[in-house]
Image: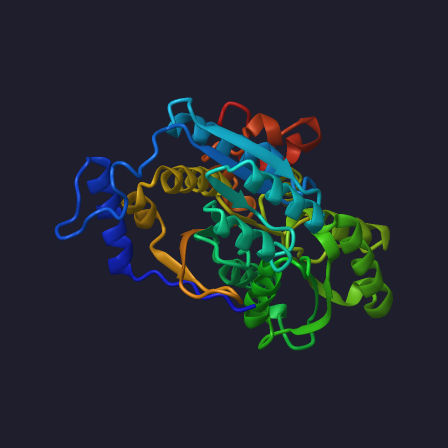
Length: 377
């Protein structure tokens, strides 16, 4: 699926100005709210949150608690968050969403297990007047907005990192194994397209696999197959779409007895991945500031629930297309490659992890070498 993301500089600047005006109770000249005071709700709103799985550490550790906290703060403690996790089951997620619709929540924030399978539930929500915001993955159907990352850019960052790691050794003789995400996740195709656009002109993509459910165990099986067919010593680098799968891939490489691990990419800046980057087992990850993503999603959900349309529109100045809808309002969050060199200025600076979280006794030497010492949080 090709997703277009657009945000002209002038539009983005105007959005910042708009937020400032509305925050001060002002209004742009010649503009007026589409919601009358009578139609605007107060702080007594109910937000539904549907997350896709628990294998990816960020969902339960960051996304859910941040959204819950933000809803409480933005509604002066009067708002309510209803939460459900699908555990990678699209049918279960559809049932969870239908239940929230029946309970008449004001807005549902959904990170779909299967972007296509959730579409009937999105349509059902709209028929009953429940707002729907797609979170992190672009759901099909008549959603009100999408918040996430430019996934093609994430893939480009990963692909470029492989080329950077290989340096002058990056040639058409260099065999790259691509282990992509779940085929039911629209992000996976965008990530793969971005990475491929960077890699295809310089190196050879020798093997490529889609990984059901983003499961590390499935990624490990793909890697074992690639090693059997290509030989571990002939693999120049491995594109892994996320950190969880990178863990399984690295296990397979170590089990094969390879002397020096090839560069392996990742995404999400999980704690285990940060440690692997420190020890050199994993080359890089992509730091996606999901704390910002979660906090912004919560504010979008609260504002649209309250009928505060100008503020909601100011937060969603970008546009995306899905297979079923065009020009969907969107908010995109900037990403950054995470390597050994910038752990301190990214995940530590932003409070994702403390040095003490990362630098347990097992990783003390690697932390010291990278300039991470306790007391530098």
